[in-house]
View 1 (cartoon, rainbow, N blue to C red):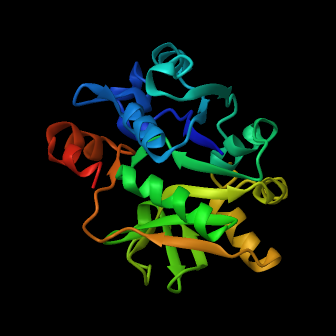
View 2 (cartoon, rainbow, N blue to C red):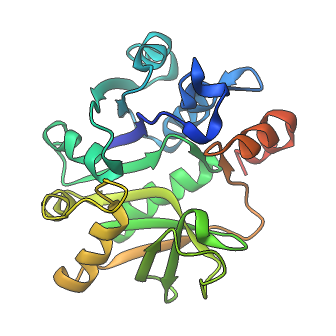
Length: 247
């Protein structure tokens, strides 16, 4: 199974750090943030990785090259038009040959056991779709997740602050069936000009009877995020989370 990591964005909320450095290559305790994610992929058993690159792509490609150092094989796809996570995924379609693939955001990090749990759940339960959810005070910066014990019922991308009736957030760690490509192709870009993965998932639930398995992280489990300057600085200034990556 191939693992896709999305690494093309400008990192506008991280300026001035990202004026000359690709967001995923920002260093955290001696390593680029992306390296921790790739280590997690290797730990979980993923050997074939696609990095979707764009802004300052050479920094990523020159550092990771073919991935041999991390016991993985890396291939690169360039996203020239930054039209969302769905747009990035569509570029990968012809490079994915199995029926399913793993996906994660390049600015989000979870304990390595979570990556492994996702892969193991897929292998043991034969789910076509898996989504990891983490607990947060308010999911207004991500996507609010509504579910029963095991399956997704609704997902709302960036809901207005204070309006969500759930503390579960889309963590940005998935396994998808290739069916998602067909749905993504039917979507109209959002007001942000982006093709949105959450919209594709909601369409699949309502129109195609998809069963999207939810894996809930524990409330006290570590989730690292460099989507904004404050969050990056928190990770950079506190090394205690490094011990939580393998818990």
